Image 1 (cartoon, rainbow over the protein chains, first blue to last red):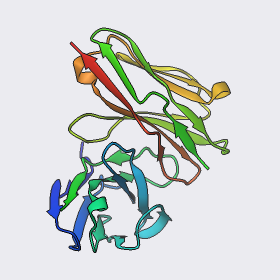
Image 2 (tube, rainbow over the protein chains, first blue to last red):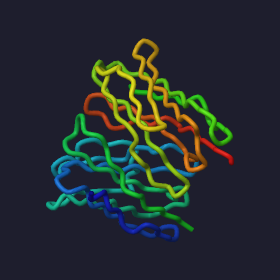
Image 3 (cartoon, rainbow over the protein chains, first blue to last red):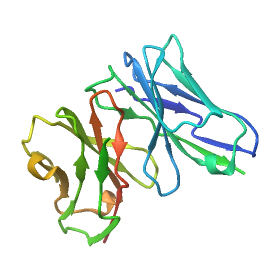
Amino acid sequence: AAGVIQSPRHLIKEKRETATLKCYPIPRHDTVYWYQQGPGQDPQFLISFYEKMQSDKGSIPDRFSAQQFSDYHSELNMSSLELGDSALYFCASSLGRDDSPLHFGNGTRLTVT
Amino acid sequence: AQKVTQAQTEISVVEKEDVTLDCVYETRDTTYYLFWYKQPPSGELVFLIRRNSFDEQNEISGRYSWNFQKSTSSFNFTITASQVVDSAVYFCALSAGYSTLTFGKGTMLLVSP
């Protein structure tokens, strides 16, 4: 079965650079979530989209923005990168917002040097 | 507000031992979902189980079993006859209403041969 696809798998950037992470949800899934997991930490919710509209917002820094496109894929844009942004970024998708389980992608590991 | 507590930071067992991972949750919602995810060293988040708040039946899947008790707000996970491949970080998570997943801090399970 098709899963959530994230690209790239690994990304190395320098401080103050920008990065774009992409997420392709499971076909027919209309809801996308972004999570950030720092080293040794639990995943923290950043932002979610339902039917291409932002549906919920968590601890996403103002330097980050995201959107969901007409084909339901989503991109997380990160600017003015800081060392503390180094983390594993997960995208998850679900069908609807309420009672569907989230299926996570394999994550993008971002390293900021 | 939602909260998930996994009091066990790390558990070490020897292969073939049974092990139980504890999870205690807090929510004011009467309708909610509980999840367990496995995160192996490779980093991906693997969905294991989802239970809704109205279904307190225990579930068994192979060597895995889950005990859901609303009276104690617990959703514990037992691995029977543990194997080295079970070594991973296990996250318990909660979703209530339209809110997104809230994860516990995770329990690192180390299974040695």
